[in-house]
Image (cartoon, rainbow, N blue to C red; front, side, top):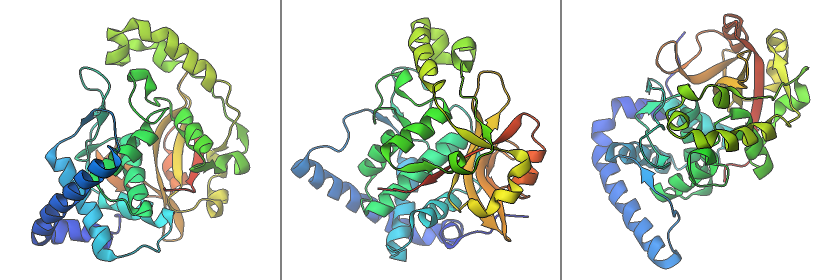
Length: 312
């Protein structure tokens, strides 16, 4: 089974050369508008961004497609999936955020892991929902999603544990945890994997003084009260899972909360996962329904489900 290619993805693959000039022109127009906005209203961002021209072109291509489609009526879930499908086939690369030097907002739309895929898609969907389609708005949205207080303020300001990532979204009012209402098991939120395995993380190994404040963060996460769906009930609960819902794999690895994430997609009447896959090393739809896919993962015990309710 292959992921059916959406019109936005078909355009990317089949008409890129035809629309390249339009995208370049759009990029200049967007940059000009952003400059005028900055002059009149002040800068949207006050932090350092690490990105490339190619990333800007990819972003503007997504926004240009949205402008051409002229669709302002689609709901948040539809926008999430439309943007997510755009990245089908994009290469999976781990640790793209782990650059040398101080913590910066890293944007790499050419190479994705499961978490950055979800973050970039949500940030772009927010741009489309709000109608603010320039690159600085994307940076701002992304920082609000990736960091505890909305901007990079050091390595530990990033939301490293996905349960905290979900709970921060919930506190902001942009997401609800569906798994809390339909889950059948209490979730063990005690985490310590990062602080007890600093050698796996370049920044922790180089900065042992980070360990104590990290342990305090882990202690706060341990206080969360959450539920999750065990693997054996997922098939029976598919009617409660909407397209665009964020699916997080609950892991049995000691001290870790979540091992993978992606978006729910309805395909042939069943729930599949659209994700940056470590098995195929690219963004793709699972070849089998989600519950069958999870059956082959012995270190996954179930799922958390987050539903985006506010894209702006």
